[in-house]
Length: 445
Image (cartoon, one colour):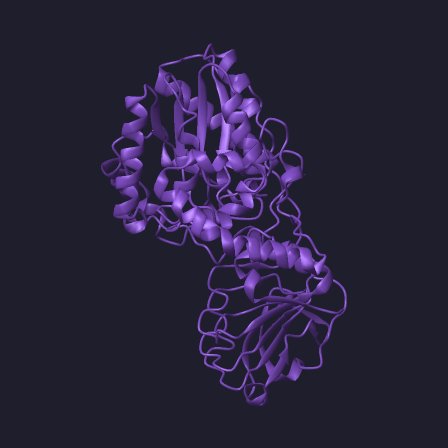
């Protein structure tokens, strides 16, 4: 996935004439069909090439901005569309992660300002050590599912991998709710992005802000009413115009794929057409955008099938939710156990999830096994588990289980995540699970 950055960068460098650069995070990669946007704009009389320049991962928004800067010139338009996530709206930068992308085209190193080049140089040793370790293991890094360089087409769009419908449990990533919090924009980041926009303006380019697509199902109750005030706050902070209506980018869950900001194929078309209309409105172009939008995909059935290990079924307490069980607590015997396996089914009824409070402050727990019937691990699920050593997953695809940023919050630093050895590389290089790569090991199935 990071390897695709060199392709995006090459397209940006090689594009002649006026261009619109859609700059931001992974919502751009998953949600902007630049080929379609280019065609629709030209049909409306706006002769621009459109360059998709969103990737992010752990690279940082600042890195994407800096890398694009030298390739933006007079007459160009930049549409800045970050996700409403604290790290995205900060000057965060990971030099070691950046080398995963730069290794594909070392010339990108020279495109950064001196301060960033110094950080990259300092991070190179750690990257080389990781690369050598992979070489020694004989197991090269490989992208997982959609997160592979091959998923991008020649236009730089993420269109070579089927994303037909929402694959998140319940259609929502519960670990990452969308909040309209005015404090999301760090002061340092606001200063950086305003100075960036001012510098582009001095070059004769224009910069505009557009909201990223947001999963309506991920907005907590009562939060939606804060959207208008949040819009006003963003407009007050930024010294360049907002071209989108925040409500136009709050979309129903069916349009999303594997995160609250990543759209599926149909959602990508919906967002692209909306973005084209926003650009047209900004330029005073009143032509009709002639494009038939796709039907909204259907959320897939989330039935649980198959067989699993139920030896610890009597260690847990349950609540019947519809036709499935949710684990809500531990019995006295469960509290005393050092090793537990969350059951697959109990008395013929499948177990589908467990509440994040089940293992709270469990000082006896040393090993927990999570089987394929569980599709989400909530943030903070193991808070206070001071002796937890192993989190064992039976899943053979990282996309089969959703994880947030706080899986290891409140557990010892020595705790390890174990996945099937055949899936280790995919977990280590997954967009979501990759953040735990250093704590992940493989076991023989």
